[in-house]
Image (cartoon, rainbow, N blue to C red):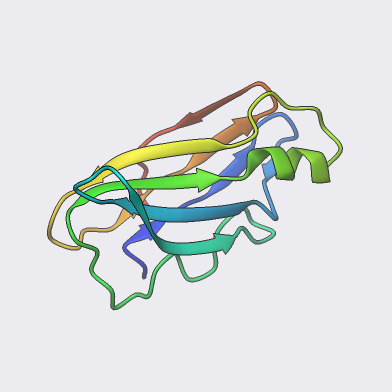
Length: 116
């Protein structure tokens, strides 16, 4: 299993958010962001196989998951306030699995450190 996984639920529609493009980047010492992975959620609102190669252990540091929420809401014909959602989190050393779910609505969102 990948070290980082996600699941997006469209709480306004009561369904998984399928077709949401997302990216994962690592923050460098100078504050810039280096791309690590990108994917699109499947019909269950998840990224099949996780965001990264299962054998890859990401180094400790700050990471950003960027969800293309504006494009998703446009595709389902819903007006929305947030064109994207950025979730920045700290990954410790050791290769532990992290699940970063996103609960999404047209005018709000929530996230938390989840379990697989």
